[in-house]
Length: 387
View: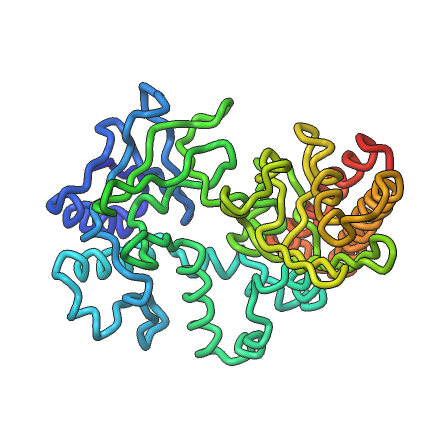
C-alpha cells in the first residue's frame, strides 16, 4: 500500500488504520507512491517510472463502502450508520476508518470553505446567480436548510459525499478510499473497473507538464467544477452554456436546459455528425419546430466550428425543408445569441461578486476567476468564428 507523508499525527494514525484493513483484503499500491497531506489538502505525487499503463493503486470491491454507510454523529463528526452492521465486516471496517480519515484530514471543514453552497453565506446573490447557471446542479428547494444548523450539517455531508462517490457497475454508489485523494485533471485517465466490478484502480499517468498523479472525474467546464467540487478547473477547454432560449428561424425555437456533463451514447448519434459526439447535447427532443436540449457546449480552439455544426444539425431536425442559405444564416444568428447571453450572464455574475466585500473568502475569489476564464473563452470563440 502507498505511504503517507504528513506532519499531523492524527492524519497518520487514521491513514495507517485505513491502509491496514485495505491491504489485508487485497488492496495494492505502487511501492514508491506517497500520499502527501498538508493543511487538510492531499495529493499523490507521481512516482517513477511514469508509464501510462502502470498500476498505481487498486482497491477491491469489499473495500468500497456504499455512500449511504456514512452519516453525521451527534458531535458533527463523520460516522457510520447503525445499519452498517449488516455490511460485510471488511466493508464496515473500511467505512469506519474512512470516516475517521476524512475527519482527521478535515474534509468537512475544507468542503464548507470551498463549496459555493456553503462558503457564500455573506454573498447570497452571488451564490444564487451561480446556481442558476446550471439547472439541477443544486437542489434549490433545499437552500432553506442552510439556515438550520442540523440540516446544514447533513447537507454539507451529502454534498461532500456526492463530490467523492463513484457509480460502480452492478454495485451502485460507492466511496473510493485513498483513490479519491487523486485530484482532477481533464488530461488524465478515468478510474478503471476490473472485469466483474471486482476492483477499482488507477494508473500512474500524469498529464504533460505535471508532477502529480491525477484522475479525470468527468468532463467539466470551469462552472461545473466550481459548483460540484469547489475549484475552477481549466483543463477542459470548453464552456457549457447557461440555460437560455434562442429563436432559430420560421418560428423554430431552441431551449437549452443547462444540464448534462456527458456526451450522448455513441449509438444515439446520427451518422453524419458522429464526429461531433464530444460536443453534441446529451438529450435532444424536437416537437413541431421546438428543439429542447440538455446542454450546448461552446468549444475551444481545437474544434472552432463544432458549435455551428451542432446547431446546424439541430435546426435540420426542426426545419428539415429549410433552404441551405437560410439555415446557415439562422445558425449564425443562434450562435451569436448563445455567445451574447453567456457573456452577459458572466458579466452580471462578476458584477455581483465585485459588489460583495468579502475579500478574504477564497470561494468568492474563485467566482471572480471563473467569470474571467469564461469571458476569455467566449470572446476567443467569437473571434475565431467571426460573430
